[in-house]
Image 1 (cartoon, rainbow, N blue to C red):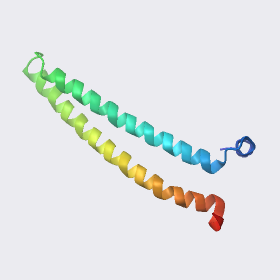
Image 2 (image 1 turned 180 degrees about the horizontal axis):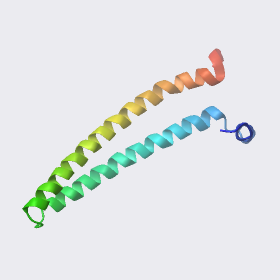
Image 3 (image 1 turned 135 degrees about the vertical axis):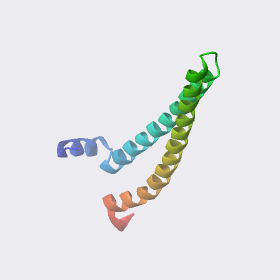
Length: 102
């Protein structure tokens, strides 16, 4: 972020700390949305694999659905860990930007 942007944010009443935390929260919500979309995709592929598409394609789609479900589980776990990290980092960021005065 450029210094001029920092000055503009300070004048507008939004501190750099607030915008940093806000950006982190947006990234976290994006990760959660990605996990949800991956789960929906896995469900759709799983449903498609149970339709009449032929044995080989059905097996391939079922395998893809399993992989996508595992990806969703990993993304959900990562999002939960990111939330815990963000909550712990919030205190550290506050101390970094404002010092021990708060």
